[in-house]
Every structure is written in structure tokens, then in C-alpha cells.
Image (cartoon, rainbow, N blue to C red):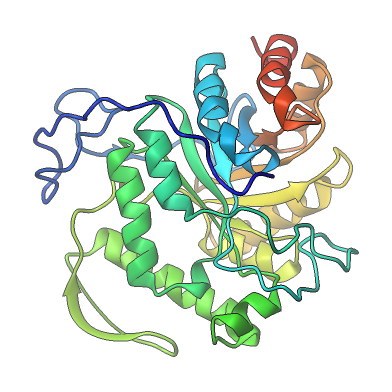
Length: 330
């Protein structure tokens, strides 16, 4: 991967029109009909979500192509693009998010960007494609910072944000940030709870284990109501429990039709136990698709979204996307 981005094509200045309360001077949401200032997320419960949607894994392409790939994804009809992130990558790393693997899947010099800033840039270049994090290490941030980043992306994109979050797997990243890796699960739960309150309540006061603050106000609220969909990532039992209790979806790693059945079944059971069996919930992950017939099999397995990278080398990305679209969903 290259260390930086190629210069982007100049973008025309956005207009500033009346929007949600507190958004005067903010570029108007680009995907909302006139007079509409919010979107209420809704839809079927888990396993009844309709045709499988396709997202593009931006982390699998040279960053110099992020804009071109996103524009082509929108033109072809891909539903979303997804950007990975780390706050920092220590030189000495160990562990992996992939079960059974001992070594990190990325080197410490891999290019990484602040995801909400970059996705907001992509929002300004597009109209329809949804913009997701895959996944954001929420617990490494104060919820004020994270909630504001999510809110900004959702507002400037006109309600196209998809928020993948995780508890993190890289202990050395937490150590570099001066935080206790062993508290990551509790810290994530509390940070997410605070974010949800900031996105929905007029005045928020909180006194918790990790965060403590007096009454504050947080405006504007996100365009999507009650908040942009939160997809909880991770393959561990703890991650599945968190997704079932707190998430609007689960985002997994690469699976096969066989390997995905267990987490889908476990999630369904856990959501019933939590009294959330009828709530909307999406399963997103990576997986092989060779032909149109594979799509129905993924749907039957309970998968709502496949995040794909149909190329071997970055220079083949655009043509690979065109070929995939023609063979699978156009």
C-alpha cells in the first residue's frame, strides 16, 4: 500500500440550506428529499432482510484508489463501502482478529486514516452509496469524540452512515494509548451507551466506571433515528453477546457458507433471550461469491450483507468490481 493519497479531483462547493436544528451553515444532506431532515431506520428482523446487499472493502485496495473505487461502487450499484481503522499501530505487535492465527494481519506501516473524516470526504463525492467503518475502535476514544464523529458523517452524508465497532484485538495499541486492554469490553459497553444517549437525549449526565461528566447538550442529532445502525464486530462469544444485546447488526470476518451458520444461530438465540428477536438486525461479513446462485445460498444462511473485494491487485480493482457486478447482481 502507498503511504498517501493521490490528489483528488476538485469538488464543487456544497450549498448551505436549512437542515436539522443546529445545522445552519452545514452542507445540506445530499441524499434526503426536500423538506426531509431525518430518517427512521426500520425494516425486518434478523433473517428476513430481503436480498443480500454488497459492500466494498476499501481496506483491500491502495488508498490512492479510495475515491475512484467508491465512485465506481456507487455507479455499479454496490450498496456500501467500508473503511478499516486503527488509532495507532505499534512497531511490536502480536495477536490477530482471526481465530486460530497468532500474527497480526497488517504491518505497522500500513496507511491508516481517521475513518469518519475520510468517509465524510467520500460523502461529498457521492449521493447514494452507504459509508461504513469496518471496524472502529470505539473504546479507545472518549464518547464525546466518537459520537461527534458519527453525527458529523451522518449529517453531511444525508443519513448514509453505517457504524461498525469492535472491542479491539491489539493489546499493544491500548498500551500505547495508556489504557488497560483488559477493560476493553466494559469500556466499549459504557462508551456505546453514552453515545446512544448523546444521539437521542436533549440533556445527558453520566457517572460511570470510565466516563464521568455533568449535564451536557449535544446537537445536532444524527439524521438516522434513533441513530445510525451500529454493527458490533468480533468472532468471540463475548462479541456475539454484545452484538445481540447492544447492536443493530453483527459484522464478522471472512466466512464460508458452513462456518457462518454457528454465529448466525447463536445470535438468533441470544437475541431471543435478550427480548430483541423482533428488532431489525443485519449480519454482515466477507465471503466468496462466484456466481448468482451463491447469493441465494448466503441469504438462506442468514446473511444480509457481503463485504467483498473482487480483485487480486489494486490496479485490478475497478475492472474486478465491474466483472463482479455483471456476474452477480446486475
